Length: 138
Image 1 (cartoon, rainbow, N blue to C red):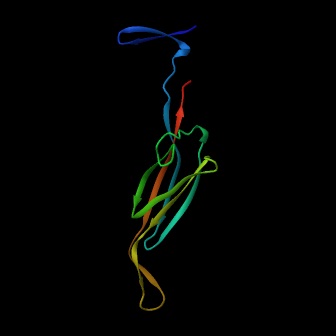
Image 2 (image 1 turned 90 degrees about the vertical axis):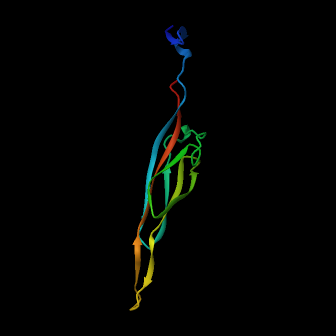
Image 3 (image 1 turned 45 degrees about the horizontal axis):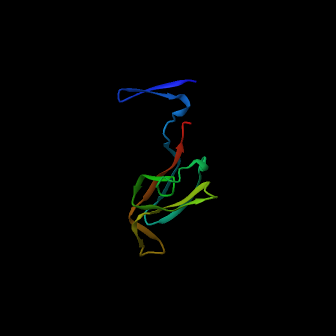
């Protein structure tokens, strides 16, 4: 039998090799990057569906937006947001929406049926979606 020798507080402790196990760690893995953009005086949303790799190993105890799921905003300007995060396909995927509304005022042209966006500014949002997994070295 192999023996592991550990020194703790100046005392030698002998532990059989199979009796020691590393602590369980939380591993953070990027599973998606998503973005949405809209021009001035316009508004829209876009839906996303992302398959979760090794979904059965997801650490559902991690307190993110969903159990085991973390969302990080990489970039946002104007009026933009994310919403409606939910698990889909029996927990094998996550679905969500990104919304963006560009600034500006739509002005009707006095000569004809046209219009123009006054003080137009676009809006955008980009997010990273991370999965948190429990990993054991055993």
